[in-house]
Length: 432
Ligand code: COA
Image (cartoon, rainbow, N blue to C red; front, side, top):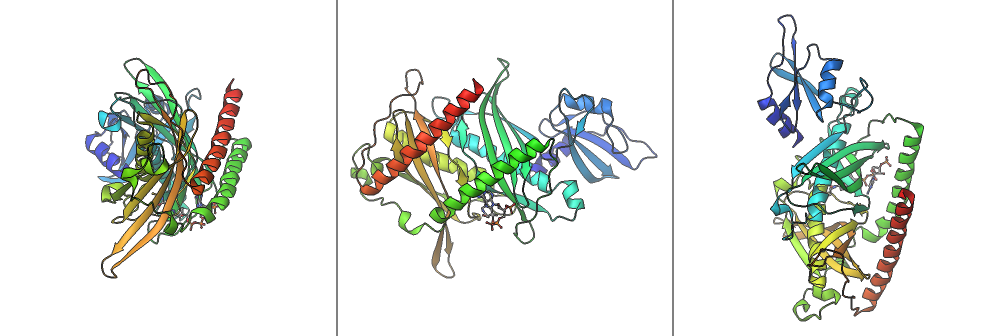
C-alpha cells in the first residue's frame, strides 16, 4: 500500500529543478495530498526548504539518477525546534474521511474501523523502520512487520460520520526482535476547527523476513533520553511476563471451544446462548499483506464486528466499543484460509458488558481431504449500551447464568472489570 501511495505521488509530482551539471534531480511530494513544494539539488535539503516542509506533514523527497528513482526519504521538523532536522523513518500520519459505511445507523463510527486504521498505521510505521536505509546498509534483509500483540486499547470518545480520522504512528521502543509502535487517533472536524483524541494504542510488531519467513533482528533505536529507553524497557518486560501466563491458555485450545449452535433459536433472552454469535470470513487478497498474510488490523475489525453483535443482541439497543484487552497474535493467518470468529457474553456490570472473542483459522486441503484448525488469537471486548434518546450510557440487563462454567467465566470477568476500573481511576487521578 505504501508503495502504491508513492507511485500515486510519482504520477502527480513535477520536476522542481535540475541542472545540466548534476546527475541528481530532487522532487518533494506529500504522499497523501500529492503536494509538491520547492526542493534543492544534490540530495541534501536546505533549511529554507525544510521550513516549507514543516507546514506539511510527512514530506517525502525522491532522488533520481536519470529517470530512475534511486531512493526516497521522509523528513519532518518537530515544531518549536527550528532548523533541527529529525529523520524518523518510522513516523507516519494516515488520514481518512469517515463515511456512512464506517458507522452504525446513528452515525457512530464502528470500533472495528478504528482498530483497522490503528493496525494499518502501525504496520506502515514498523515496516518502514525495519527497512530503513540504516538497517539495509547494515546488511539486514527486506522484511515485513507482523502484528504480535496489541495492548489494551481504550475508546476515549466516539467518532462520527463526516469527521476526519487522523492516525499518527511512531516506533517508540525496540528489543532485539520486536518493536513497539505507539499510535494516537484524533477525530478532526475541519469545519468547526476542532480535534479530539479518541484512541491511544500500543502495538508490538515482529519483523519477518520476506525471503524465508524467519524472524529477523530489529535495528537498535536511538532514544532521546535514558529515561525514554528505561520506560520502553519496562513496558517490554511487562508484556513479556504477561504473555508467559497467556501462552498455555490459548495456544492449540481449539478443540473444546466450539460453540453449540443448536438450541440458540429457543434460548432464553439474557442468557449466554441467546446472544452468542459467530462469523466466518474467507480470506481474500484484499485482507492480506503482499506476502499473503492477513493484516492484524483486518482481524481486529472482524473481532469487533462479531463482539458488537453479541452486545446488541443482549442489550437490544445500540452499543459502542469502550475498550479491548491485550491481544496476542499467535499464528499468521494465510490467504485462502477461513477465519472463524466466535463471540460470547462473559460478564455484565451495571452499565458495561464484556464479550470474549475466539479467533480460529481453518485450512481445507482438497488433496488430503482434511481440514486443519488452529487458534490464532482471543480477546475480551468491553461495550457500553447507549440510550436511544440522548446516547448516554444506560443500564445493562443482567446476564442469566445457566452453567457452572458460565459462573466461573463471570467471576473472572468481574476480576478484570475491577482491575480495569482501578486502572482508569488511577489515570484520572494522575491527570487531575
Ligand atoms: N507480543 C510481543 N512480542 C512478541 C510476541 C507477542 N505476542 N510473540 C513474540 N514476540 C517477540 C519476542 O519477544 C521476541 O523478541 P525479543 O527476542 O526481542 O524478546 C520476538 O518476538 C521473537 O520471538 P520468537 O519466540 O522467536 O518468535 P515466534 O516464533 O513466537 O514468532 C511471531 C513470533 C509474532 C512472528 C509469531 O507468533 C507469528 O507469526 N504470529 C502471528 C503474526 C501475524 O500474522 N499477525 C497478524 C495476525 S492477523
